[in-house]
Length: 353
Ligand code: NAD
Image (tube, rainbow, N blue to C red; front, side, top):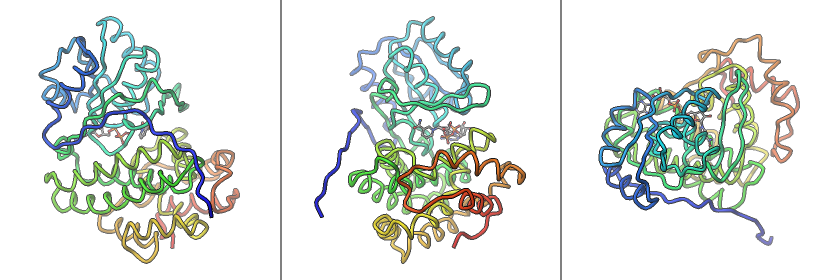
């Protein structure tokens, strides 16, 4: 069979090195000609942000960060950037903080340098998101892609283990869903396969030794690959489901991904033999689902949506909301009954096998 595909590689510099954030950040800001830096970091990350930006020409520290970027929060950050005449944005934090910097970049065109402190992966995508009175909107724009990313695994050792696990499984979901997402191609599949391998190696080490850098380093590398694959491949069934759950019922982002993933893999794996083979190989297991479930057991991963705030009586509403968003390219056929069953299983925390 001939190989034919189109793949777009996004233009971005990546620096990777534990303990090197401050030095790498200074070089990246200088490379952009930054003389007036606005630092975005939530209050919990203020100390680490102050440390890694100490050498920069900072004109403003902005600490109002809210998950899913509510419009008024984005407006205030944009106003602050204008008021302080910032020429470079530096974000230090998880997906919520990166998302805020992207919101400012979207309307101002200011370049972003991202210093991620979770495995969310937003830093490697050109996707922005915002919420307006609870309704979540996303879009794609080249202006929001950070010009450079500074990965420093030593900044992630402060993550509580449950947060690291959920966030790492969010990255795992980027890899797995990339295998059958609408624009997937062989490059995405290769990146996602290596991402799964690295995450499966790193996450158990984090659980065994949460403050050791080694596990975080592997997981962070995997999370970057995951995000690059996801950015190119687009949202598959898994992300469509989680988008509805997060936006409509305000569920926490990373744990929702962690719970839903095995149920989508159980549905799609048997209908996507090439993806199934690749995922199983990356886990070093007999089947893809066995590999994922063995990892989840080692990590004591989030198991049931009911534990994360989803009410039982919205399951039918959720299934109906997901149905129109199901990608036509999904390998397994999906009906309203498929979704009702999947969501109930995920809500209960049932074994998907
Ligand atoms: P988050 O950024 O909200 O962070 C979760 C919590 O972790 C926060 O309380 C934060 O203070 C804390 N935290 C972050 N880093 C820490 C560290 N090193 N040590 C201790 N605590 C730390 O959550 P997230 O899961 O990183 O990001 C979720 C958001 O990102 C969602 O809004 C999601 O939609 C978005 N996202 C967007 C994209 C994209 O491509 N646009 C991709 C992935 C995620």
